Amino acid sequence: MAELVATLASTHHPFYLRATTMPPEEQIPQAPEWKRKVELYRETLSAAKPDILVMVGSDHFHQIFLDNCPQFLIGKAERYDATFYNEEREFGIPKYVLEGDMDMSRYMHQHLMDQGFDFAFSNELKIDHSIICPIITVRPDNDLPVVPIYTNIFAPPLPSPKRFYDLGRAIRKAIDDYPSDKRVAAIGTGHLSLELGGPRQFMETGPDPEFDRQAIEWLRAGDVEAILANVTHETMAKSGNATHGFLNFILMLGVAGPEQADYVDNLDLFHTMEAYITWYPKAQAEEKAA
Ligand SMILES: [Fe+2]
Image (cartoon, rainbow, N blue to C red):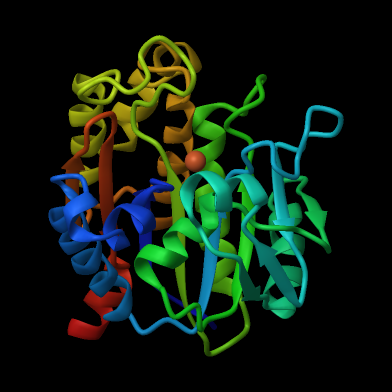
C-alpha cells in the first residue's frame, strides 16, 4: 500500500516569488526572513522523500465560475498547465506544466465516491496559484507528479467545516489504501484571517490577529474538537471576507488526523499572517520505532 509520508498545510502568498527575487534594495524588509522560513519549511517536505504529491487548493474564479461551481473537484489528467494571465501580470508567477498521475487520480476519485464524496472531475484542469504557490515554495524543481483537488472556499453556500475535516479523513484513507509502493505527501493551502477587496484589506496585520494566533495553536495541537466547536462560516466571515480559506487547513488536519503538528512556523507580514505546518504520520513512525 502507498505510504503517507507528510502532510503540509500552509498559506499561499502569491507575492512570495516576486518579493524574494527582486533586487535586494527594492525588497520589503521582511523578504530575507520570509525566504529563510520558506526554505526551512521546504526541508520538511524534502526530508519525507515523496514520490507523488496530492495537492489541495481552490480555484480563484480562474477556471471555475458561478455558472457551474462544484464543491469538490479532482483533476484526472496526464499533465496540467498552470498560472493564469492575471497571476503572471499581478504576481509575476511564471507558467508551469505539472505532471499528473492518472492512476492515482482515478483511484482517488473512485475511493472518495465510495466514501460518500460525490466529486466532480476534470480531464482538462488548469491550475492556479493555490497549487502553484506551494510548488514554488516547497518543491520548486516541480519534479513530482501531482493529484490536484480543488475545494470551494469562495462561492457560498460552502460545505461545513466538519465536511472539510471528513473529506481530509477520506483522502487519508484513499492514500492509505492505494495499492502502490509510492510515498505520498499531501500538501494543501488556504488562509488564516484574510480580507480581499474589503475595508480591512492591507492593514498592518491580517484582519483578525487573535483568530490567527488561536488557529495556529489549534493546528499545532491537532485540536479538531476546538476547531469544530468554534469555527463556523459566520465566525470566519467576521474574521475577514476570505477567511473561509481556513477550511482547507481543517481539511489538511483531517488528512493528518487529530495529531500534534511536528513543525509549526508563522510569519507576520504587513497584511496577513503566514503559516507553515507539517505533520508526519504518527502511527507509522511509532511502528517503525517499535
Ligand atoms: Fe489565493
